Structures are given as C-alpha cells and as structure tokens.
Length: 379
Image (cartoon, rainbow, N blue to C red; front, side, top):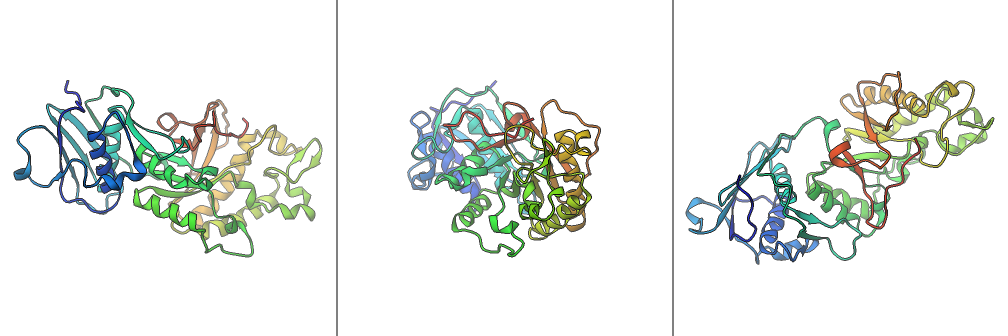
C-alpha cells in the first residue's frame, strides 16, 4: 500500500485556481509540504504564496523528478454537494473535488489524515499547523457530499464568536471539515420593535469569512425562550413554567398552555420571516442546573424532552408555512426516548453526556482549549 512521504520534493499540478477558499487551501498545502514538522501560522498563510512550491498548470511544465500532487475539480458551478476524494500512489497523489470548495475540503482532509494538526483557536498566538503524527494510515478516501442540510457537519460557535479569535474559528472550522456554522441571532432581531437590519462590524466580517470558505450559516442556539417574551410575566403568569407550585419567569415556559403556543407561533413566524435565506434553524431550550421545564399539573405528564418537542413541533408547523424546505433542529439527550412524533421538517442533534463530537454526532460546540467541556443543558 502506497504511503505519503513528506520529505519527497512534491510538485502541485492544478488548473488555474479561482480566488477564494481553494486558493487558501493550496497555500496551506504548499506550506505544509515545505515545513511539515516546524509548523507555520495559518493566519499568515498569504505571505507564503511566492515562497513555497510553485503551482504547475500543464504537463509540459512538470519537473522530471519528485512527486506529483494532481488536483482537479468539476466545472459545475451549481454543485452544492462539495464532495471530494483522494488517493496516494507511488510518488503520486490525486485529490479531486466536485467543486472548488469540495477540493478545498479534500485537501484539508488529506492533510489531516496524514497527521497534520491545526491548533484550536485560543491556544495563544496565531493558529499553527504542524505534522503531529504519521497519520491514520489511509491511502485513499471518498466523501460524496450531500445536498441535505440535515446531514451537514456543523459547528455551534456560541459565545466564542465575540472573542478576538472569532474569525480564526472560521478558518479552523474549514480545516476541520465543518460545512455549516451555527451562530446566535443578532440580539435586536428578537425585539418586537425593530427588524434588526444592522449587523455589527464583527458579525459582518464573520459572515464574509464563512462565505469565503464555503461554509453555510445557520442561526439559533439556546434561545427558544426568547420567543415567549419575559415581559409578559407581569400580566399573564400562566404562560410560564411552574416550579414548586409557583410560576417563575426564568427559563423556558409552559408548553401545554394553548396561549403560550399561540405566542410562540406568532413570534416564530416573525423570526423566520426575517431570515428568508436560512435553511436550518436551531431554537434550543435554556441551559442551567436542575429541572428547567414546567411542573404544572398538565406538564408533569411530559418529560423535559417531550415538553421541548411540543414547542418545536408548534414552530415547525409555522416554518413549513413560511419557508417550505427549511428545517428546525432539537437537542436529543443521550438515552432519552419518547413516543411523541416529530414533524417531517424537524431533526435531532444528538447530545451525549460528554458533549457532541463531529465524527460521532455530526456537530460540535466551539470550546476554548482552556475549557474542559462545553456548558450543556441538563438531561
């Protein structure tokens, strides 16, 4: 079985490369071949463009000695699968993508499989890429990609969006093979008084970076309860959850109250209408310790997961009217089952006790290296 020899003089053979994510992937590939052990700062990759392996654009330009890395992609600009494949031969590596973004993902996957590692943002200094091990031993790989948004690998950015390393998380997500990014909605977009058309400068840069890398934006997070405004507690406590025999304003709401569901549907409709381009939404219950859902006489018959699904199904009905073809996720804690059915436009995100992991669960929560585990809602 052929294996990758990083010490061999490699030559990258590719058609002319369009600006964007593929150009960045080629810069990283080129620099990785130049200094496989020493590592280099990914955030400064552009300065290496004229200092590393030159790109070869045709057979006549191929040097007589050394290994070849042959790159190509389909010219179908409408392809949304962004699939890829690669294989290692004797002094020859072939990487193919169904699109430029797919080829970028193929390059990153190839490098990861050969033991290259990119430090997680927050490690201190610039993101550094280096060869950490000899790799997985794979000599070939194929990933066809998918157009089904439910099957995309996604990263929930959460609070790290507001760190100074926010943009570095986008580069890290692209390297790790994430296809979608979940970001919190702009705060003002939940307001009844404004439509929130103005985005912060930081948010704009983040969206531009995601677009550059071909990463799809999805909106949401732990913000389901925002669709039942807390100010209504003054006039109608029955909308909110019961704890120890008393209605409380904090955390979630009473999902078996028809009036609560009507408000949830109304605010959900407004929320979805403001986002005509979004294909996947994530509206999850509040986090916190202890029992976070309602314990009124009616709700006591339902588990926390079932109470969540009652609310999610109500929102899914509205979403189907507003944006047919869009989807809504819910968090499914490990080991919990329910006889309640879900709408066809709803899908589960697994939530194991040790937190979600991309390869096992299809998604992750962005966590700083100093944090041992993400903050998760209770089971």
